[in-house]
Amino acid sequence: MTPDQPASDTILLTVDGPVATLTLNRPERRNAIDDAMRGDLMAALDRVSRDDAIRALVVTGAGKGFCAGGDVRGMKERLAAPHGQVALNGWRRQQRTHHAIAMLHALPKPTIAAVNGAATGLGCDVALCCDFVMAGASARFAMSYVQRGLIPDGGGMYFLPRRVGLVRAKELIFTGRTLKPEEALKLGVADRVTSDEALLGDARAWAAELSQGAPASLALAKSILDQSFELSVEQVFAMGSQAQAICYSTQEHLDSVAAFLARSEAKKAGRA
Image 1 (cartoon, rainbow, N blue to C red):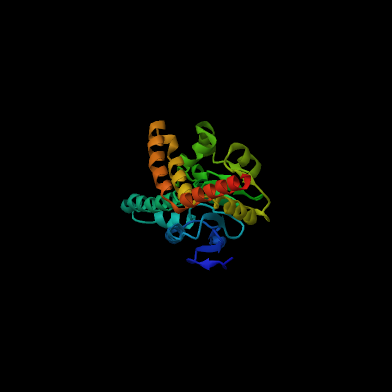
Image 2: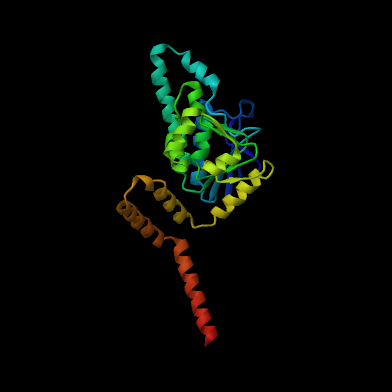
């Protein structure tokens, strides 16, 4: 395992074989995301996406919390801007937030959120945009936007209904209430629950298991599955045909077929 590498002041990357761990690193602010961290997160995700040796990603938080959402101090500075600039500045910040979340959601590799402590507001969105969510015993999930007079702006209104259904998503967003690990698991907000002590090890082991599939197969299947609720069956068939044509030409497929045929021939020779 490589040591934590300061991809930036706010993001750490650890690589252990095929699994990278991305750590949100502002523990003194419960890993709340500010403008600098957004940019650092995008840079780190681009690095992970481009590195073919990395086959899966675990996302977690430094210290006692996963991510407390947006930085309230940054909100104060935003509202202190001249009145005529508040809306445009907010729109620009939203674009960067959405780009960062989209990069994590669309990463062509399996992703697991290892949630330690609070994942609230934007932090909950970060967890939900991953393929899978593993919760430690101290994990807490809350779509807390309503408590600040806001709506979920990090993709929660897209990701949450797909996990828990529309009615339950409305209830969680309208109330902003907090879920402990057991309820999060029951509702489908979390996929697995473990102890705080075992959280990172269990998440990395799961990521290593997921990383064993052929990279092209995983990336292409993920890209289609993530759109499947919005597609017709005919569209899924069409996209699947195109993806399968790519898979036919990959070295992993060629090697697999060759190995299967070699085993088959060896069995025939043995019987003869």
